Length: 164
Image (cartoon, rainbow, N blue to C red):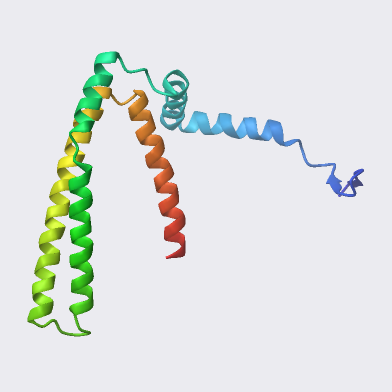
């Protein structure tokens, strides 16, 4: 084995070929053996380069999007979520280790009803948000921003799940 000392004190193997041509050869080989994956990947890059930040909404689209988004009642969702949190807390503190008496059952029923209410309010808000996104389009500024936020949120969730 022909080892030579480099100026920084590291030892380089003279018989090892440079990495650049090996990487290019590996990429070419992968592209030949997996044409569908490669073409889909390249298509995605082209789409990102052409519509990377999203297309600009027209004035009418922006007005319609804002009008639909303003119909979402965030206060109702907040109030319903607060009632659910209070009911869940009451149920949690009234249940025993292995049993649930009538007081606990009443709190459980209240918690379940408030959960249904929260789900209904959120479903209505999500449906309206979906209608607004349909107006804007998938490749609009709004659609691209949504996917970027979702990607960031998923990264945070995966980091938190690591510690659970």
